Image (cartoon, rainbow, N blue to C red; front, top):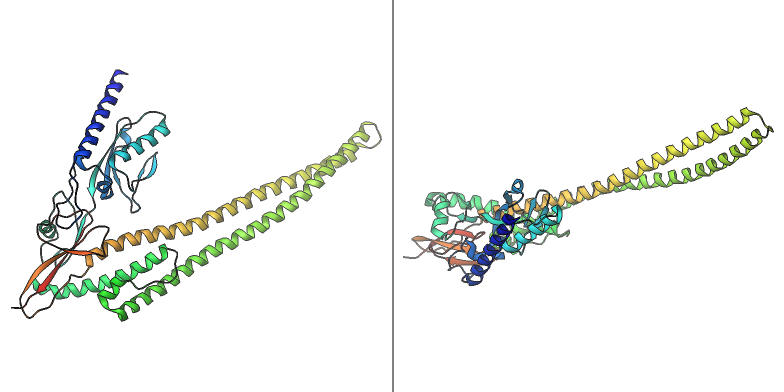
Length: 390
């Protein structure tokens, strides 16, 4: 008991220290020219947790639950026994409190939980680099370090070939993303995104969207057909169920009549006014009717189970399609960040490189960056070539 009390006091003191450090910590400006955020206990805020890709949980009384937990695309983590918890908008401290409360509610005992970020969202580097893609973010990462992590700047001879390939992948991914977003919104018509028009022009953008519209219509028709088949099966089962209930009602009436008749015959037999064979025949009739009634009850339960199965099938079809769309949307977000074509300004001769930066959460806005510019998790860095006149 004394050990548990000391342990609790220690955790309270640690919590006070974290709270004090957070309140005293310096504010972080969200501009392209500032340093990237720290990862120590001074910045235990919602923005930090919002950049997490994986978190480490440590339970004081349940070591079997300790470990790294991946953050799902919908900003949730799934913990055995405790279930799925949304981290959206939470700080590290409030997440600890939320998990502890849920664990206590399930086990009936007070729980202590610590949460640390084990992996941040990566930085995406694209354009004129040798290995475009995700680069693991680390504290104080700069543009130069991210470019080095992406294999360095390409040799100029490869620029044209890779730029054409990237543009082709980029435009197709943008069109596919427009279709996915339309389906997720339960809409039927895809709007041509301005990004796609800016990349390939209005005519080519419309052609790509028309292709995706045909695919959307085809998949929507397939899902609708599957749902309709399940719905028709459910309707037939419901019709069968009603017929069985009517039939059972009639049988139940006959059972009651047979029981009354059998009771009357039994009274006559006890008074010696009828023979025993007639009494036996009436009891056999009652037994036969009761068996039919029982069989109808079993059939009704079977049909009710089939109706519930059809309901589950319809829900599973819709949920499976939604999960597929979410996975595809997440994949396209990553690939679009990797294949975004660099900006190039033409001139008469000579060239240099430029860095364009899109902050996470504001992908439609780009700012120019320097080599020493600090990066945040989820940033998209595009390396381009600027031609200059002599």
